[in-house]
Length: 118
Image (tube, rainbow, N blue to C red; front, side, top):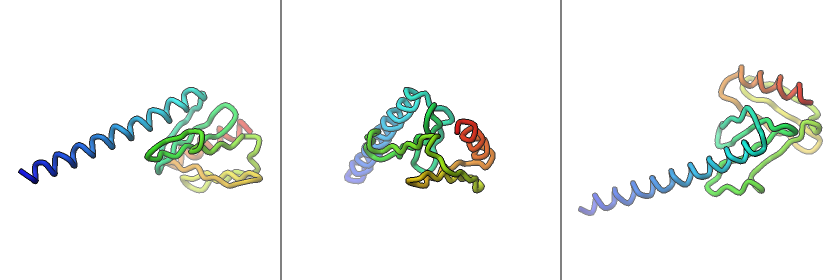
């Protein structure tokens, strides 16, 4: 009987955490849609998308605060770009960011689109 209650509590916790995570994902996806971002991808706990005037990165945390958790790089601020297999290294005057992808051909496609917007 105790084992049944214990497993029931564990199941409830897992279900609640899953619902919470889906809520966060919905917030992030809706934010990207509102900003008219395209080529949005999710890799290693981070959403990345090409918006009309910038590249936006938003980390998926337990609690999402989009105003604090986002990293935005304007196309105008990009000084240098380099493709390294499944990663794109973007260097600005202030920082260096990495866009990661699941496949090399997607990284090459995104690299080409960013080059066109620069």
